Length: 463
Ligand SMILES: [Zn+2]
Image (cartoon, rainbow, N blue to C red; front, side):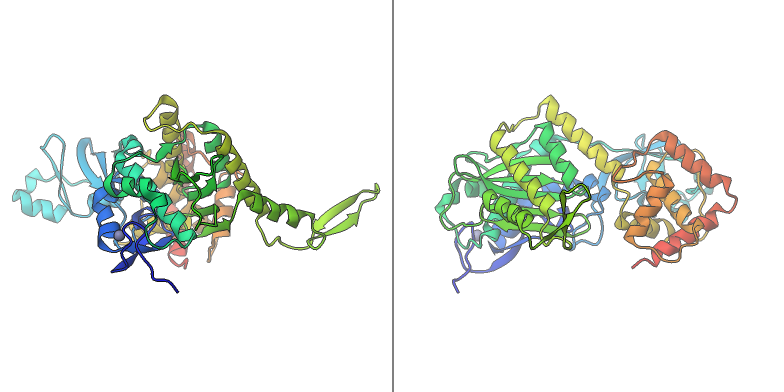
């Protein structure tokens, strides 16, 4: 058993477990145990990780990703309009606005806080105006900045992810000169930037068809010149290509690596020597008579029926080979934004904001935040245009209406599908018309508050 050493500085003193992708950016941890604690783990946080984590707070918040160390979701800056007055604040959720903290309006003429606190601060009750939080419209404006995706901090973080992951999967211990360029770039921020942004729309489509919403995906392979390339797809929003090494190190045998890290903390992984080896594996599987039984058809032909659930994920392996072939052909990454990539990023972020509602975590979080300290029945504001709130209330309404005592993932998906008349993998795009319809359907029922609360209770008991 050889001694573990840091892959950045070769020390064997005070090694730690580094999160390959920072804990605050994923619910599925992957670690590298050959990283020294202070200089090459903790210090990276100040050098480049924090900047990226803060800039992506809105995304992680939408995807219900939070650091296992921190107790709450990351807060993001927002402009909110409440009862006609604008406030600039940072928030994690809308209930955050009414939790009693003091928020000053943009024109500095109003303060927003709890009623009791307002009275004691104003010392004059006539200066305090009460607003009914159940019946007001909160208009929220958030700015989605794209600069971070082209920022030096992001490039260093992506290089770190690629390097630590490749080393972990090849059980690399200690520093090796083969990785000099990328190590200098990560630790010092200079040298040749090994990271570029992929801006080919086809590859974004190819990957988003296969990956789960909001997943991270990592893929390592050798290009035509035997350089080690790593594809880093973050949240399905942005794809980077990293050259970890300009040749294949002789001590690294696993040069076809694949990992998908999902927001529900599940993961998929493949470790192989090369794409050819992976291809051989599934072709052999498909051609073996062990796994299939020939069934004669009336027309004289034979049909091969699988003997059970395949032990390998054939579609996934084919997908990986396709992606590798694509990246071997197309190699035109950029470092600065252009019109195409800006369009792609905007599109992908919008999609996440719309479709992040379909998961157990988000609906459980909504119920927790919305029904925690509720003493009065829930009221729907007929004027609200908050799509997320209306959508989630409607799901609770359907559950409460359906006499369902117990819920699971499959049932939730079924309820969503039935409620919106969709089938297969079709995604629901929540439009203003749809929101108006859902609102009307609920308000029509006199006892809708009770129904929604019944639905919320079912979700609360979902383990
Ligand atoms: Zn070190």
